[in-house]
Image 1: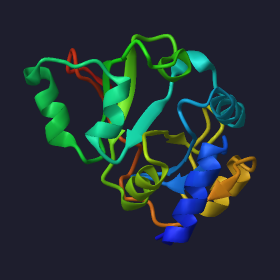
Image 2: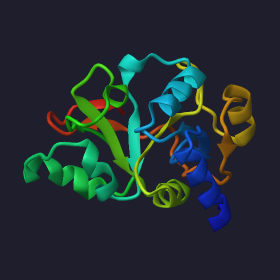
Image 3: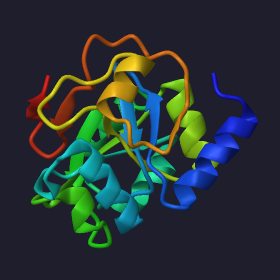
Length: 184
């Protein structure tokens, strides 16, 4: 696990527009400050990914995710709240203030309140939600260890080392409005 000093340094780099890598629930991820357009452009360049696909936001708490979403009736939010914190990503209606570089070509935003210790500590140190996407070039397999990370995403500014959470594949994604499973 990263030390408090390493977490403070990583949060500082994120605030300055850095792109960081760290292990997540299943694979290594890379992320940045979702409200920094320069950082998001760098992230998308590293991934060679089109902006129309949008990005996942990950937080340590529902409060960190709340500014990016519109409220839904409790019946629709119940399965979301019951799955968090945990390895479940949900598509929820995006707040009008959520930047288009986060939502892509959608009116929904993908969000997760993580239970992964390093992801949570990083979000807490940063003080908000972060973008979180697999560490790979778009369309290629995600990194599952630090060596693969360095080979696949050499342009990240910093790496926080630790174990992945043990899931066999990235978190499932479900649409909270329809219940549809987007990614099993």
